[in-house]
Length: 101
Image (tube, rainbow, N blue to C red):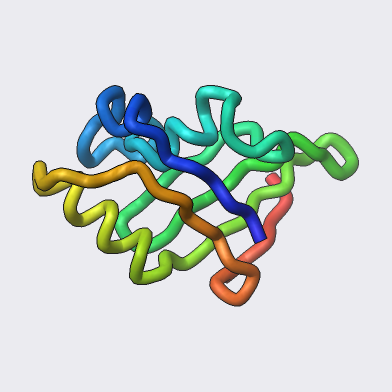
């Protein structure tokens, strides 16, 4: 389980329909999010988290399906509606795939 806090600053800096610069991705990608995650790409249907830990020189990636909360946040943000700072959890039960790249 990975929990992040999306800040008002991330919302203001976030770019719509941009998988590495939306507020959720910025929470990870600015280095203030989760220590074990190097960066994230947030898509319409899922998120890919790239972990800092490597196995035999390969990066571990986790693909999570989106919860209703994440879907609602993305849909509102991308359509220009107001979103508020919030805590989001990437739940283990929504982990679709773990890969080595």
